[in-house]
Image (cartoon, rainbow, N blue to C red; front, top):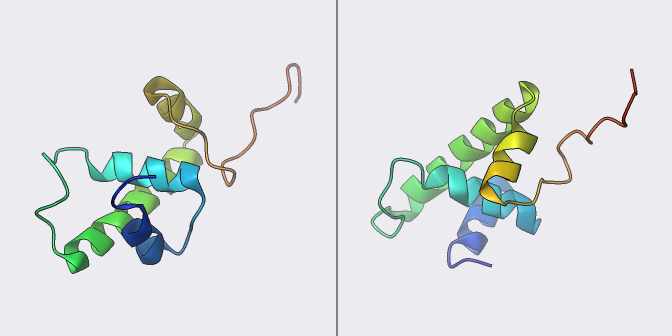
Length: 86
């Protein structure tokens, strides 16, 4: 678990490792690091990044994003449809 995992968990109210890793990855987009953020800024960015992850899920892109970056897919994401289902 990363240095920021507990702070992220406190900010978003989740503690599963897959969600924490995903949120941290999204937080790092367009940033050179997280260490320059205040606790308030880090918490706000964590909440925004969780919302971004939820938006990726809503449009069906979360699983592909996680797969491309080698991240575990969070349990709250929709399961992969069974072959031939539908």
